[in-house]
Image (cartoon, rainbow, N blue to C red; front, side, top):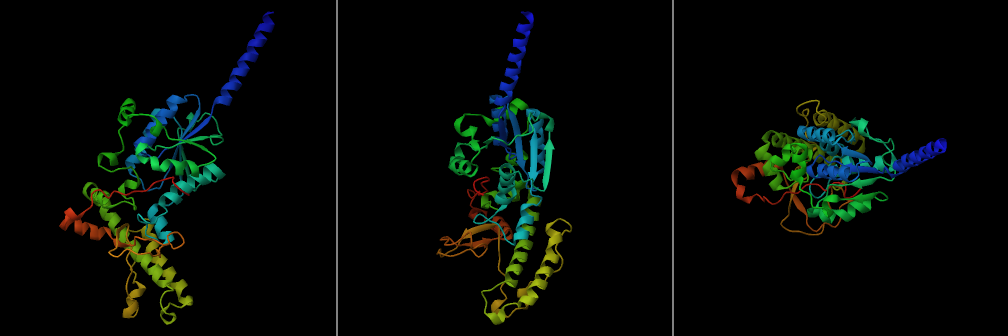
Length: 372
């Protein structure tokens, strides 16, 4: 009788263990490095303490040093594993490779460096170039992707993004706790004694790309110039060299001019290689300035020597009409609000001379994970 009782207890114990394993669901928090995603992580852990929870950070390699401090501290204090993935290039390097100057009307920073990296990994198990783990010991089961629920730090103020995010991440289930729950972000930060990311203290709306968001507006860039002048100065220089590089690239391949003024195809490859040699080292941080390079338009006839200007910021033209953006025609056709370049140098001059003309409410910024 005693043996039978112990035997049954053993069976009950095994059943409970198996039941617990079955109920240990996978939960992945898209950890952006912002306050909201940290609060979501805390909410999920408190709601499902026995489940397999992962913090997932897609790194643009362009973030503030304090962002990396923040995500590490959050992982440590929450005692949750943090997986960091990266495509291996920065937004500036991506623009150089694509020969495009991103702005509020066009840009693939989030799409290629964050969304596609995450989508390829979670949906296809394709690992990116860069992978790092923090606190891997807190992972409760090796397979953390299967049937996972995905969590995003989207609040009620971004409700318009909810449907698109959920649709794009099918067949995964998507949840956004900050929309359905009243949570005080400051209270959660105090609970763990974690300092919020530095960019919030400096007045930025988000903690992305160390304040250098190429989709940002005038209000954002005014704050960048005021609070981090050295970052603004470097960004302004990069924008100038990038638009000169892109302008030269498009000039070399321009098919819109008469045949007799087009650069012969046998010379284009040589000229493109010369262009790449002049700028690649600069944009990949191997030198402080590009090599000496003469824009090909400088030797053109007067009619075709104009150097086309590109910029991170755009402002509407005086005569809106239906048009196409030559930067990427297959994506942006029939645009009814053509815009003109507004370089950071021009912005700086305007901000110094006529600050009242700066639109402080033009913040801008990217909406990560909306489409891919």
